[in-house]
Length: 344
Image (cartoon, rainbow, N blue to C red; front, side, top):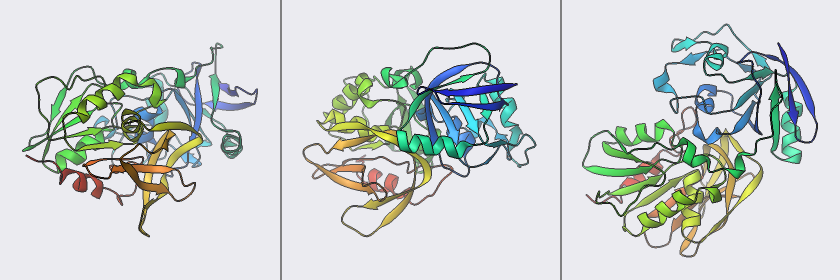
């Protein structure tokens, strides 16, 4: 079946369908990663978005067991690739990408000129789009909704065992954040985005997770972070968590022109010559450093903020993913640096 991708400015590209044959709409964004499409597709940070993958060959290693996904389901609204490979080969593969998309009712198009599409987004910025296969649909702008409320779990969940008990505010967390903590002998309590920290349970530290959408729409999560700050415990924000922490303490955020979505974003540790390769997936960035904090990391490409750290207390955040899978492991030391501050 031949479908089309229509952008809000009227641009239309035709392509062959290889997913579920239905129409959808959302924000069109691109990722330049060479590998990792199962992880990207299940990353809650992509909620409400139509994902364009710039690497030309997609599908050649299939889809792994569910335990290797970053969440329990596909999170994107649609997928655009240049060349889809249905004949996969990989020891961990359980099904083809096309079969998976059809099973979870996600449309996908094979559009040859993804280079044109990517260059257009880079020049004009991320924009709304529709994948049209059968019926027409209304435009959908994910920036207008609190997407964090959609992807966060509803009841607390405890994973792992250990003396150090860490709360993880689930704003759309990737599973590998939990894996990295459990690997370090930590007991992790995964908490709803609107968790009430006035409740009796005590944590030795708190991590505010990644997640989707406009951070200023996630007001319950910002309020939860403000409550947690009163507990005088170490806090680490990751990706969206960087923005939520910033908003909770009086800083500000803004939307990037086309976002950072790749596995090769260079980040400089402020005050040094050290540059780390990082995995990123975000459309918003910290635009004003809050009082009492200093810039911790900065993007070497566009000099945007990549993290903040308090000048006195163990409160910090990073815009990239130190738990990145797949991706470079350059910054997994962030977890060890943070957990050193957790007092049992």
